[in-house]
View 1 (cartoon, rainbow, N blue to C red):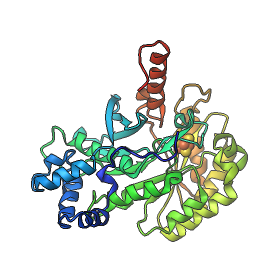
View 2 (view 1 turned 180 degrees about the vertical axis):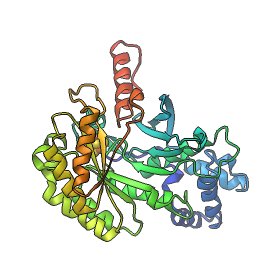
View 3 (view 1 turned 180 degrees about the horizontal axis):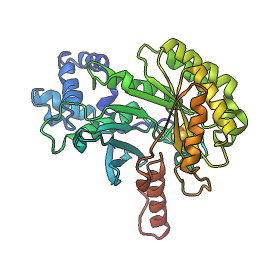
Length: 378
Ligand code: SF4
């Protein structure tokens, strides 16, 4: 498969206000209409050109000839009892990606007013093969286009507006770039998408509420620190020494801790914001108190917050999470080094919320249907 996917017709989400204005001018169309089109896309979040009622019919037809709006289609929504929803999207080339909406119910507040985070994907599959992660199990297929990243959020905006009186507010509080794929290895498309979501002519979503999570691509972390729009950063650490991290994160052989930590330090010094160190707790792999001490030292040095995540079972892997007492004791040791630390309550275990699991399950179902001659190749 080609690394660069070229759609039959591009999504208009690919355009910025400047590029659409330039395209209109080149085509002899009124440039001011580009602002109107962006308002329909990101303000009113329409998914058809015909809904752009103050745009002349000729221009709408021109848009239809040259673009689509949505480059993907939602083919499955899986809800969990603890109010996590996973949306499976099919892309034009039949590849599957997943997006997760996580609600955080608060006491005394109805579900519709709960805090919400959307976790988006940036690649089809993943090449980095972190040992706890289902996304890497079938390898990397391709990078997502910027429009395919933006479309995941725009779909959630429309989905959440259904049944609501208003559809102009943004129905989530945070975006985490933590789904399928290593975002910093699809750097240009991810940055293009996040900049669009943040732009005044785009979704106007605050950059402080967007977190990019990386397995630890040190050169790209440095590059990200130099971008004009500053996003939050989370590092998938999962091991506080090279010996332990090598067992969980193959990327550590390319960018070991003595390369990664200085890159993160450069980011925090330039950026001035607290970063997060993600640490999945796996019994007898990385849950020793020696690891906790070293993790606490790294976090204190970086002024980072530590997010401990009890391991979420992945089909095909034998690892387990430590018991709650062990998790708490581990957190106490990290805290005693002067670092701030929380233990995350895993949401959506029953719908395979860990990244890549729903896609993997769906692909396995499709393969088994094909094996039984119940489905023909798309
Ligand atoms: S955790 Fe992220 S970088 Fe690692 S395999 Fe999964 S998707 Fe890829």
